[in-house]
Image 1 (cartoon, helix red, strand yellow):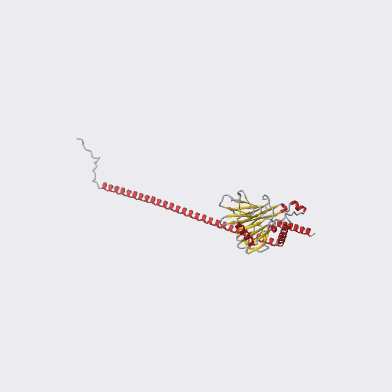
Image 2 (tube, one colour):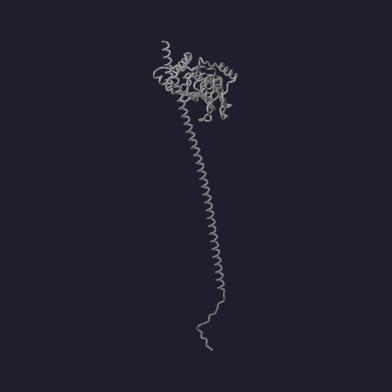
Length: 385
């Protein structure tokens, strides 16, 4: 009876968890179960200091300076964020009743460890960790992904399972994958055209990794952390049966994790709705601010263009007025010259008339002063000889 009740409780937790995930639109990705030091969440424009049991949402960016955090995901996968690291939960879809499982984590810099307890086929269902230079894809394993932003080198170490690593040529093209086996490492250099072949870890590298995990409290125990989350297929959902994967010992931690996360999801549902409303209000405010900013920029540009047009028009008007004044001055100067020529011609004509009048007068005086000429008397008859 106890086993039946436990199985029913476990199934109910899974179904409740899936329902919450669907209703939240895939927004809830997991929660913080281990926290040491200061770790922050970048959620939109807000930077939030993480507390234990805080909910992690899809699209959250986790950034640590000296602190560390373990995130128990909604599907019982584990993501450990190391110091001086920045990772984005770019995509986290978990809908086993619809056979939809897709995970994409982006490591901007630093290091994370992924304990992948789910099974992925690498085609329809994917679990990928991306850096600016590499992509690590798995089907179910434990591995670390590291990116040195200064050297621009990615490093992938497989702890258990098999990891396919490709080099990013651009946003769409990748090199053929190389496969990294347990206790092997591969480096991907941005400057190199090809991905180097994986090599076995050196003894000192193994000791360094184990010591680092032990210091952080993240040591891997296959008996405790093995894959245990059952896959719920569409046919299983109809019949209400849940297929368990692995042994009963490996299932217990997953049950507790799912119950714990489901309980947290229920208790934080109102907080999540409030966060969504706040985020929506913030986005609306930012959108209005951007629109006001763009409107002001547009008005400033229009005012600037209008001012330039006014200045050009005033300049053209001034040039036109100067040209008209110049032409008017030339016309007036030509008129003055013509008037002066006419006046000079009149003066000359009057002088010529005066000269001719003088000459006429002189001739008249000369004619009056001549001696008189006798005219014979026509009445006197002179006899002929």
